[in-house]
Length: 130
Image (tube, one colour):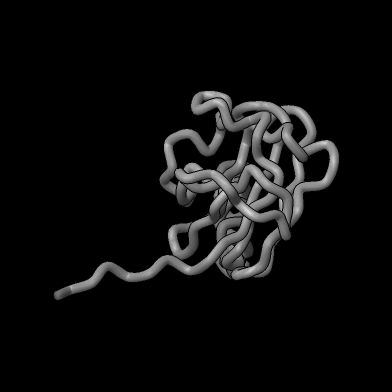
């Protein structure tokens, strides 16, 4: 008798959970942390695309985790603040960071954890089929 009560309770719980809608993440979600591997002070926000976002304290020149959600967009960390003019002949970013970027949880591996000041994100451009 006790076994059947447990089975009924388990099935009822499973039905209740399966009826809960799964929330899809919004495009533009980025996790920032002062420490590597999502440690230290962390903040998660959904950022507007095609807009420069200035990093506030404690993340300004102090971001080791820069982890965008999903595969539909990419972000470009920048050395300069929003509005600054890039004078570097090689550019003021190390390139795109997306969901699959291998160092997104440890920018210290590429020595950018003390450089990032701002960033912008955009939808990925589909590869050309030509």
